[in-house]
Amino acid sequence: MICRSKTLIYNNSAHKSTKILLCAVLFIFCFANNQKTFSQISTNDTNINRIFASKTLQSTYIALPLFTQSIIYKNHNFNFRDIRQKTIPNFRYDYDTYLQFAPLTLTFALKSFGLQSKSNWSELGVSSSLSMGLGLGLVILLKDNIEERRPEYAAMKSFPSGHTTMAFIGATILSKEYKDNYPYLSIAGYTTAGITGLSRIMNNKHWMHDVLFGAGLGILATEFSYAVTDLIFQNNSDKRFTIDFEDFRNEKPHYLSPYLAYNHNFFQNNRKLKNNTNFSIDNGVGIGLEGTYFFNKYIGITAKAKADNYKVRNKNIWWPEDSLFSVYSLDLGIALAYPLIHRVFIGTRATLGVNHIDENPLQDDVPMQKQNNLQYSFGIFSNIWTDKHTFLRLYADYTHTSINIENKNYAFPTLAIGSTIGWHF
Image (cartoon, rainbow, N blue to C red):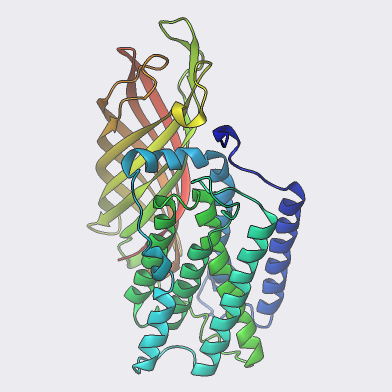
């Protein structure tokens, strides 16, 4: 029988080699980009545009945050799996086996039907081959050296997710070829890739940090391969690394984005239960979807649906999974934004909402009955235009609600901090 408290097995030397490998990839990528670091910039543009014009930044602003989140969420794998186990425990569909190839297949299909892409057939073939060779090669190398057990307690091949890497390779290729003239193809590609990664978690084949790292790896491998292809074909026109320098100050900053956050709770530790044992609640994580529609460039309405998961510590709890509880919530409110500098919006939001907590399975130790509570929150955010249809989003939200344990209400304030990519519509 497999001991559930020891489901993740790592090799420390493999971790060191992985870090060295990633640093080497980034160094080579930056060297390849040194051929032409900046696009043509008008004399009226500020220095901030030079930063955003950097091909290195354009190529890493999505991948590096995904790697960072993968590291953060690694210690909260059971939190995300608990949400899956309680909401869709019997989910078993293998469509992700085929869905991972959809974005790349669509790219070649559209070009075959005559839709003009940014690359000719030779460039596209080399870029695609290099992307898959590098990305999937690194997946195999990491799987063989980092022996991590899958959440279903099967083979030791969990980290990273190869399906997700393949899906994001295809989505990045589709985006680079068509996003300027057909931006919704880019959104469709990344949405499909995101569904592929989410499906691997829903099918209980991967942990959250496997999928996040796989997504970042697919994106970075593709960006690196496009840079190398430009060197091979002596393509110095930056035609595949374009960015629009129009003034975004007059744009209404609508967005729709996934929500990923690390939750610090201010719940007092060492509370007493009726059986005279102490209990406390650890910090948690959140996942969801949010969006904001602006009536003008300053004022809008915002909505957020998410699931937060926390771990209860009590000496009578034996298995890690048994100590977890989820808070499902829906919030509505107003958002205020201001164009701080070129391409950068800052803002604040205030919301009211409701949440739901399922009955905790350990009624004798932590009697948390099924309950619904009101909550309010306020937060700050920064939306950074990375191109005309994409935001890099940074945010922090303070939420105040209550939880009922043994028929006693406790204040439960939390601070959520996160980053993600948002789609401008």
